[in-house]
Image (cartoon, rainbow, N blue to C red; front, side):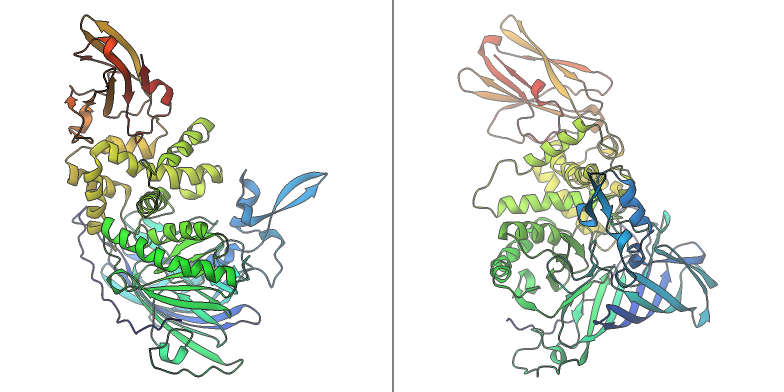
Amino acid sequence: MKKFLLISILTFSIGAVSAQSSTYWQQHVDYKMEVTMDVKNNQYKGKQELIYTNNSSDTLTKVYYHLFNNAFQPGSEMDARLHSIKDPDGRMVTKTKVDGQDVKVSRIESLKPDEIGYLKITNFKQDGTDAVAKTVGTILEVTLASPMLPNTKSTFTLDFDGQVPVQIRRSGRNNSEGVALSMAQWYPKLAEFDFEGWHTDPYIAREFHGVWGDFDVTINIDAAYTLGGSGYLQNQNEIGHGYEDAGVVVKSPKKGKTISWHFVAPMVHDFTWAADKDYIHDVVQGPNDVALHFLYKNNPKTAENWKKLEPMMVKVMDFYNKNIGNYPYKQYSFIQGGDGGMEYAMCTLMLGNGTLEGIYGTATHELGHAWFQHVLASNESKHPWMDEGFTTYIGDLATNELSDKKVVNPFEGNYRAYYYLVNSGKEQPQSTHGDRYDENRPYSISSYVKGSIFLSQLRYVIGDDKLAETIKRYYHDFKFKHPTPNDIKRSAERVSGANLDWYLMDWTETTNTIDYAIKAVTENGDQTTVSLERIGRMPMPIDLLVEYTDGTSESFYVPLRMMNYEKANPNPSVKRTVLNDWTWAASNYDFTIAKAKGTIKKITIDPSGLMADVKQENNVYKQ
């Protein structure tokens, strides 16, 4: 077991002005919490002190908190959603027989009183004065004792009683792999208030949105448990469990003794932890002296795979640093404790059994979220494609780059999944709120896959180098903020000089598709006329490759007029001709090749495969 030296707390500063707007602002919170965990009955009691800074120009008369645990109760909105959606999450339902037919039944509806989750709030005060707090499902609505004026602070204090539910989704106890406590979204969490107003979505198992701030958390728990999670442990010499300084001997705690784990997490928008009696805890040094923690169950097969995982994740973090920007904290933890994998501040909770390949894929994706969501904190409830899609993109890049068997197009599978979605007739615009998708599978393909294609296709639109520069610019300009879809578009425009409003609108706000065709190839003396047709609603610039019977080839590029942009030649070894631009209003386009038709072997629209044309069969002409 590796030893871990105390890491000094990072100090972050955020400018009042973002690259997008001189009027940008965001709220700030300072949490101080102490919680005592009763591991026998899976209940806990806590106190919370929260200093809230109102950086907006609004006077606030109310504030709202999320009480996520309340979703795990019969009759909750999460329970209702499992009854109404056509394809409920398999982890959240069980199968039973009704009149001889298999029926999926919500696991939540059958939870007993000692199996449900809850958060009960009492003694809410604002600056020492009682305030009225009302619980409505998974939301606590607080009418303030005194209005909060712009650019002022208030201190909110409260007591809370919680019960950890049987693990059904993300948070809970005694999951499928035997992890005792997966404590995600476990505390009263202040809702975000931003330029759009309050974000008080009920919890039905999708994504999150949080307020940037600093967390000071003390967890009192039976000494037999090892903890991991967000933040830097402040009292590692008292704790042991692999956290102690080198050379310090920590006596084994007495059975039944309670010890306190004190964590500090600077400039994050969440705090998560997990605990188990049988965790192995390893620490390896990652890039830029970042400590990578690995906490996993003590069984031979799991331990073997996790040991192999450790150097692999050092390489992945190094790849992300180089291709996005440096990870800004000094610690990250991979913790066996999820029902799949889920990103949290400075850590992930993830399944730990299974194949090394599967664990590596999950860990690679979840680590990517440390950039795309936990530094670039987009509203993943409203725009899940921004964090899930961008993380899928960078994860696919990393996996391919670090593989012994690299492929030319590591995104090919994503395009096939997107075409499936289009052909299913179930696609909804990516502007759909994450909770509002009719079915789970279209949600997943839209968020993870189509969101990834937003970037891989942008490579086609502006070029590889410009996209790589765009991602770094986006990270530089919007880290520790709440970027919106317009912000990634503007980053790309600033880097490339292209006008890309059409791209963001058509791809994310509509279900318009791309479909270009080679309509005709006509002999014209010793020349050849190629007729192209735009069938789909979404316009694109066009790359064509012409291969000749003598083994030579050349390319042609048709700029899109509304872009006001000419992409660099993506393959400089092949001669390229830049043609006149193509307007959106014109559905047909002709150009001439200065060679006879008989010399042409093949013409291909988009030889890279990065343009998501939904009908590939009309993209190729063969003689």
